[in-house]
Structure formats: structure tokens, C-alpha cells
Length: 342
Image 1: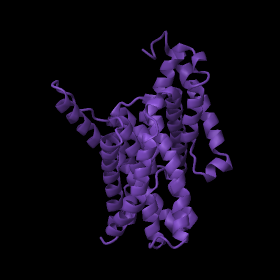
Image 2: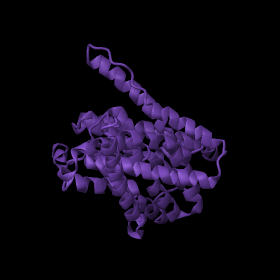
Image 3: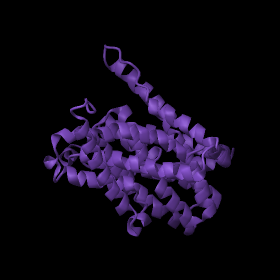
Image 4: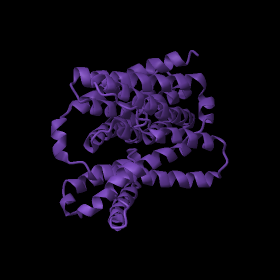
């Protein structure tokens, strides 16, 4: 047991080791160059972890490994639960039916298209296809992290999916404002905010792209993005149910349904946050701690990712992410136009 009397000190040493790397990631992510690119501490953390995993990992005491795995699994689940403090049910009311239809449609269609194209056309394994698809459909790296325990994928597959989020989310962050200012997107500022919030990958990318157009655009972009974030919970519940059913049809032996309980707690926290019982300052501090916890989970994931395993995957995840990127730009635009009619 990781926290048995004889192993406790080593496990805590492993957790502290991950925390030190995460503190470095947080410090580096605060550099203006990375901030301007919308690169969050989560992304820096996984990169630092991967660099370590492929250079000095063999120097790590084997007894510390449970601490890394604890950060990657338990701290991750706790961080996803407290992610609920970033959203409120009032967010839904602010953007109305158009924001709800846009968010729900983008999440549903992006995941289905990604899974089909990834597995049936590109020949990707199901885990990688699902993780890349969920990274594009919901909220980037955080969504990949939340889905990984449900899919039970290997850490390197999550790292691949996060990499696609970084590439195409960063491109979208610069591309959307350029297209709007060039007059190539027939939407007003509010509608453009809904479009950005509904189709851009990371929260940081959404904030940056929205502010590049205007304050009103940024406001609606963030609200719609938060609705997409809230959809993590029902999405994971449906995915867990579907995977369990699929396993029981693929095999003769019956498989129990895996319920991602942390997704239900995420909804509970979001509901509590909607009551506005805590001071804003306290909620801000909780969110900062939660970002650090997510960074620890990403860093630990990086530490468990060996580049050699990427050779088996090749460029197919990039191809899939590119297809989804095009779908989000064009398909997302028509979904927004459709939703605005309600």
C-alpha cells in the first residue's frame, strides 16, 4: 500500500517531487511569452515531466513511483471535482438557448466524428481516438485528464492528446480574431464570442481569442466555454456507461458499469458554487490551488510518458486533430448560426 507505515515517507517524497516540478511549471508559465501564447501551467508541467521521463527518470528511486502515480490518479480526480468552482448554473442563463445548443452540439458531434474518423478511417486505437476527440470537443487538456481514468488509457496516449490541444488550440487563438477582423466571419461581436467559446480548445485560448476581439466577445466566449466545461460530467457518465456496455457485448463475460463518481461531485461543487455562498477571494484562491493540483497531475503524467511509445502512434493523432479543427471552424460556424435562430 502506498500509504502503509513502511511506504508512507517514500510516497510523500514522490508527491513532493512532482509538486516541485509543478511549482517550476507554474513559474515558467507566468513568463509573458508563454502567457501570450495561451500556454497554461498544465501544458508546461506535462512537457517538463516528459523531458524528465526521457532523460533522468532512471535516477528516480523506485520507491517514489507510488507518489507519482498518486498524483496522476487521486490528485487528478480531486482537481476535477474542485474544477466545479469555475462554473455556475447562472452561466447557462446568461447566454440562453443559443449557448446551450451550441455547447451540447459541439461536444456531441465533435466526439462522434472524432471517434469514427480516428478508428474507422485513420486506424487509431480507440483510447487515443477518444482522448484526442474529447480534447477537441470539451475543454482541452483538462477534459483529456478527466477522461483518462474512465477510458483507462496509458499515460502516453493522454500526452499525445494534450499535444494536439496545444497545437490546434494555439492556432485557433490567433486565427479566429484574424478572420473576424478581416471580415471573413459574418457574425457580430456577441455571436463571435459564442462561436469562440463553442469551438476553441483550451479555456486560456478562449479568453485570449475573445479579448482580442473585444470585452463583450470575451464575456460570451467564456460563458459558453464554461457550459462546455460543465458538460464534462454528463459526458463522462454516458461514456462510462457506453464503454461498460461495449465491453459486455465484446466479451462473453459481463462487465460492471464504471461510474466516474468524481464527475458527479463536480456537478455538486458547481451547484454549491452557484449559490454564491463563498467570498470571491476564497473562490479565486481555491481555483489557484486547483490549477496547481491539475498541473501536478499533468506533470506526473509526463513523468510516466516514454517518447519511445510515440513511435507506435505516428502522425495519425495529428491528422485526426486537424480534421476536428476544420470541423470546429466550419461545422461549428453553422451550428452557431442554427442555434441563434432559437
